[in-house]
Image (cartoon, rainbow, N blue to C red):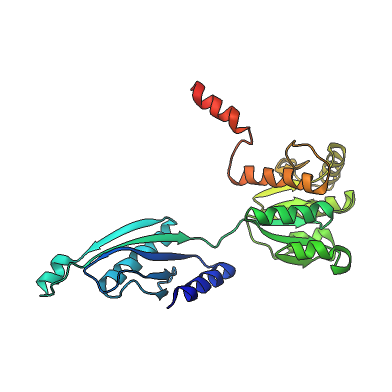
Length: 273
């Protein structure tokens, strides 16, 4: 299999959400093949070759192990003694680099495709989020937002987000066009019980009103404590793009479990310690 074909296979696997490992010959001694690659999947199937024989079988075994452990590795195989005992005059040494490639991307669900929602979708995609947009409006009203998302789900009402086909562990940003629909959307997200993060756009007064409404409707206070609202970091700015930057910055902070503090302060703390 040519390198071009392997690259196409990698791209197709990533689009399908399929993890794989890339095995590359780093060094070969006494072998007919001195270069080569293969893609290995968790079920043991593979494309390409690193020379065949016992070397390739060992590389396949170790690649599957790297897939299980989600790590990279360098592996060296030396079958010189075994080959000599078999009467084969060959050094038989092979070193490979095994790279674990994950197709998984953190899912961001934006509920509401207005100006800020559209800007959030665009900014989030640049930093690796897989994006889904949910809205009751269609192409005529929010066509640009729909095109900005990887996936669009049309809702009859924003409360239907609780029953939408969405993956567990997704991040949610609620940015609809009014208090009532924000409350319905937030209630729907909370009812799922599988969100990794929930944030909602709005002023403190708006957030307080929505929380009060949901509490009166029977929502448990502990559930509302999980909601980050108003969402975003204090970066300043009022345009949709500036607001989106503050939101996506906070999403990255949560995703990577960082403090959001200036690096200068963190480095200063390291020096003091």
